Every structure is written in C-alpha cells, then in structure tokens.
Length: 382
Image (cartoon, rainbow, N blue to C red; front, side):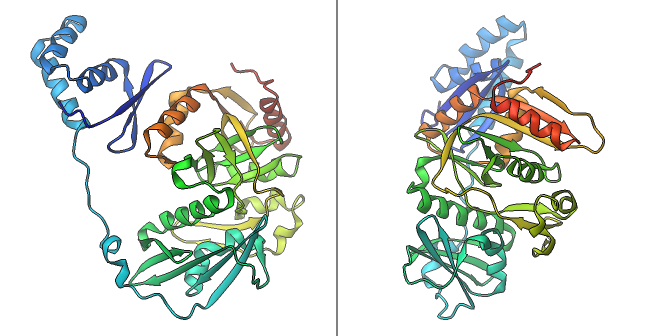
C-alpha cells in the first residue's frame, strides 16, 4: 500500500469530507467509503478489509474486493505533471523596454507602480483598481510588470518572475495578480493564507458574512445595497482568509455591477450613471465598477456565516439554513485552497463550525433586515 499519500477526514452531517494531499482535492464520501480509505492508508490489506465489509453489508466477498480495488485505483491515480514550457524557459523572454501605460495605486500607505505593455494588459487589471489610482509618485513601495509575449501574459513583481499564462488561463493571471497584492498589503506570504473564496464579504465592524451565488444571482448587487445601508464591503469576488486567525482580510478591488442592476442602484449611487462600462465577451457580461466604502484595507474580521443569495423577481423572502454538504459542494470548486496539510486542516475545522444559509428575495428592505438578523445571531434556522 502506498504510504506516501496523506489524507484528512472531517465528518460533516452524514458524510465524510476527505482531503487528498497529493492532489489538494476535497471529496464528499459516504462514511463507509471513507472508512475503507482510512484502513487502506494504514496498510490494512484489501482482503482483510473486504472480509469485514462483506460480513457487515452482507455482500459477496468478490464484489467487495472489486469495489475496494476500484476505489484504490481511483484514489491513487497518478497526477499529471504536464507544465507550460514557459515555466522552464522564461529566462529567454526579454522584458520590453517601453510600456504604454504606467499606473500608480495607493492602498493605505503602500504605493504600487504597475506597468502595462498595452491597452490589452491594462484592461485585464486596471478597471477593478482605478479608484485607487494616484498621480505619479516617487515613493514606490512595489513595482509590477505585465506584458504579452508570444500569446502569453507575463507577470513580474519587484523584478522577480511570477508566472506566464495563456489566453485561456487569463483568470489565473488575474487571481495571481490579486494574490500578490494581498501578500504585499497584509505582509503575508502565500503559505500564510488558508484560502481565497469567490464570494463577497460584508462586515458590521465586528464580524463578516460571506455571500455566494452563481453569476447573475445578485451577489454584487446585494453587496452594494448592504454597503448603502450601514455595512462595509470588506472584499468582492476575491475573499482571502488567513490561516493563523482564520480572519477574512480586506481586498481593495471595486464592486462589479452588472448592467441590469444599474437602474436599481442609481438612486443610491448616482456616480454609476456616468461610470465606464466594460464588456467581458468571454464571460458574456457588461459591468460597471463601484468604489467600496472600506477606508481601512488593513482590516480583518472573523467569519461564522455563509449566505447563498439569490434575487428572484416577485418572490417572497425565503431564508433557511441549508445542508453543509450542499454548501461545501458549491463553495469549493470556485475557491483557491492552500495545498499545505496544516492549512487544509484549518479549512475543514473552520467549515465544520460555520452556519450556512440560503436567502431568496425580491424586496431589498427585507433582504437587508434578514442579513442584519444573521449578524445578530437572531435568525430562525428552520
């Protein structure tokens, strides 16, 4: 039996969430399946496990053996080691001597100088951070370079090569750019983050709630409504959580507002009327960007609640506590989770103790009132 693979197990409701170190993957397993895996990883023979399981489940021994062998094969399937040739040959790429655009962003007392080769590279990053732009500054804290070469986007930070991404992987570049930002803002290296979640984080100055939902469900619109009603936008779309204190940390990007939400928000944010529209053809959406009301991008707060939010025209407000397994299967696929075992354990422990809700609404006032109750732990969980 292969003993160089490590696993973590966390019983949740009537299942077991299992983490695989060799692939940094999480699977929701039946408890019986998780039990087999535990015994295999401890070196117990297939025959011994099969005999006990056959007796327990009253299943023929040969079928039980086949099941365990098939499970073992799937679990220990070798990982692909295919890598981009740029990971080895990037030193042969010459950095441009001229960049068409240079932007300066001030985040707290940190000043980032970011050079973009052309309008294409600028478009990948700048719209979300335009509200942080300042005039030319000599007091540079960090310098980023972004340029296209041979259909790959290259990224350097303080003269260090970070990576190169093809057109189909541009979202990974954008995620890495954001990761480098939070590392510099919060003085934490990548291994010090438990994970980054595709969500919105709203705070009441004492704690934060994560809002999740498929594109078009109204997640960012709900965030903007809450921001206009006394809550703070801690982060939108990119929500980092540190491993040491399991706190959500501020991220300074603007809130992306889809075209069909502008009319709803104009009375609260008249600046949206004349703000630029950005067309993202790959995502089939048109957005405008709204400045977050956060004034302290060093801020960080605990999080005990996940809310899956959905705007549904003319619907009554519905709020219910949902299965953690259901929530887990929605949360994990869109998240970056640390591959380190200690961080994976912290993620499982954190997830095990959080509350998970579903809110469906059409009345903004009722939605805001319900979120206020969740912050106060005053919500009916049935």
